[in-house]
Length: 535
Image (cartoon, rainbow, N blue to C red; front, side, top):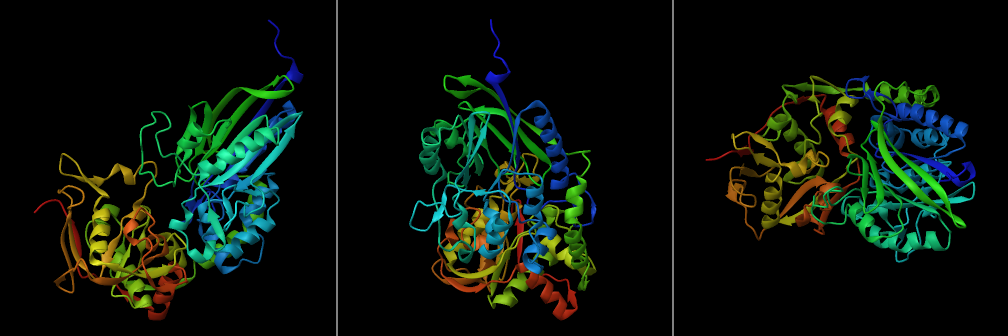
């Protein structure tokens, strides 16, 4: 048996990052302690892979799969406080020779001006075949795919983005855009790449995840179109590799319908690595072997060039984070996140109070976004503000009915699961594939009780407004963040409701200004809501 000689076999390695969310350095900004995350560590892995590829005559592709420029105080400071210098994330990717990035949903969070500036500053193209100019099929960002030719083999990378963005994003941030179905876009572009571009290999980099378990095919979430990875593998022939993200899952070593998949978590904790072997097939090349794996950054030394590039941005960010804001009289700290979500407390009431006083609305809701939220200590700095309110949300006041209100509270109550031992836990659908604590709201301005010992859909056992039962047909104006006001988190009862007031300022800034103006805020709460486990 004759083995193919060197000229008949090619090797391609793909490094994927996804959902970096502004994570450049191995740091936890809440306390400045070391954290095993960040692009500086990924860069060290990438340099090692590149050196190996060059020495062995192999091709290395580096692809970022989206949600790059938002998420840390460093990214926020650059976008909102001083956007004049180049974006540190895209500059770093450019220095490391990234081939392409995909537009993620969080790329729009700071508005189109910030996004367009980041795209202009990039040495690599931003891909998305299904974000198109309104009323057309023309990709808005100009380049839906990338072709790399390597020793006669043509490798295509097609970019796709979750089309669910209009359900979350501030409409002003996505004006002039349509978000086409990702599966339909792939069904159009993959054959084009095979036929017109003569691609021997087609890699789809999709900022989205899996709506079904990639191993069993069992339904894992409500079919909204937010995640379509399983359908892409099953319904679109001609895809060799599917790079995924958005869900912050860690997936590798799996093939769905012959398509090798990978998803590398988030914040640069791991890099997704795909290895391909190509063999000559007549006049072209075909993939003979495929594999995927995740490589963690634990113990990896940060790249010195990335650290040097980031240093002036980090110095300015740290000065901003340590800016004193004011003081808290009383207790607004978080010791047990579950207890915060079970009964009215000073922290959540304070954030709701800021929203109500800012908007003039008599009713408000907000969430404890993560279990890492520390609350506010006696002396508050900007670090504490952005450690608690981690998203660049703005505020809206929408008009809903009492029936909508009850439906939203029933949706809230689904967050909890009561164990056989009577202990309160989190419903798995709020924990897998990624934690969704941000989809559980707590309300101020109404009085309510959720009894989670009852079946889902019948857990609201008390609901009053100023002491009177909430009228299902009456209209109420409610302040909430723009994500929730658009129906984000499957709060479909809010979608399309009249917007009474739109406050374009970030909520974190509103909170900071509120404390700055008052110097001292007294921690208090009125006990207007609670979660119980039986009568």
